[in-house]
Image (tube, rainbow, N blue to C red; front, side, top):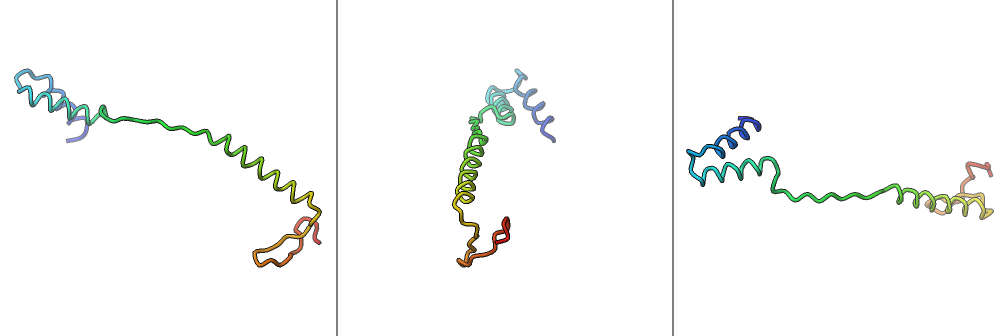
Length: 89
């Protein structure tokens, strides 16, 4: 029995006045559950574009500070100076 068949069955039972009220109410409840009627949905949205713009702005500021500091060398994790890839110095 697939989903559609179950829903049709519950609908028939719920509408059948020859069924007991208990069975009819149970069919209505099962049908409602199968369609997600009792779920509480909370929609959360967060506009990441503002965060991305702020991160890009901060990155640009840091790049500007590095470029205007007058130090053309890069420091590796070990603290050794390496040749600057932009100036070759």
